[in-house]
Image 1 (tube, helix red, strand yellow):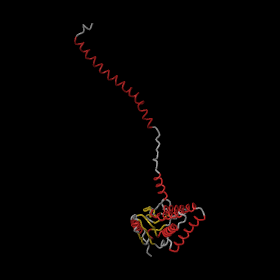
Image 2 (cartoon, rainbow, N blue to C red; image 1 turned 90 degrees about the vertical axis):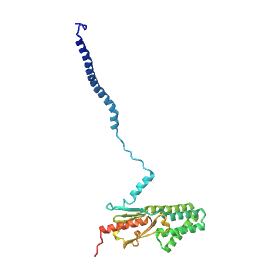
Image 3 (cartoon, one colour; image 1 turned 120 degrees about the vertical axis):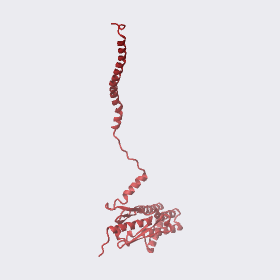
Image 4 (cartoon, helix red, strand yellow; image 1 turned 180 degrees about the vertical axis):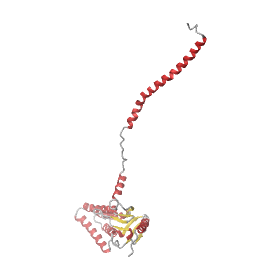
Length: 277
């Protein structure tokens, strides 16, 4: 039977079924092709990402400046080597840099003595600064101060006149270097149980005393030290009346340090009350 002989209803049914079959077959073909394409493309796209994730990461420490390294070394040098681990450091201070003023003036006067050919004026200035240094550093009396100042000035003059003046200049500079090292190493450390003083350049000392053994604290602030709130801290006890722990000169914020030390002393007495016999 020819298409012309087909009934009109059958031709319409075939025309309606043909688009539906094509519409149903097309999504199935696309659905079957799409997972294959995604499966083929996915490993290629994820390969660089997984390779980047598998790369070993090297952690680099940030570079520290010279000042930060010096500060870290100073922290390790200070109280970590002589305070027991059972104690907690509450105060750790160094004396004020104003303490280096007298050694600096003495060094300048000594170099000017050598530069001016043993000028009497600068010799007297060198002797005067040396006498003040002996009072501050050695805490000497008048007789001992005169001996130290006179002998040092005479030694500088003889060394500059009979020997090489350059050798005398080296002596003056090395002396200032020793004062600088002594200032750097001299520290007041107060823990929750004891008071320490670390001092010494070549041979280091760290005497200590219990907070409960302190009778009283006294602070003295000179007019010059009021500009920098620096002063002298004195403590009195039976064991340390004439020892290195009896006096600390030019402590920064000496009043605050004294109040904090008294507070720690009160807490230490409360924890360990003295025994009454």
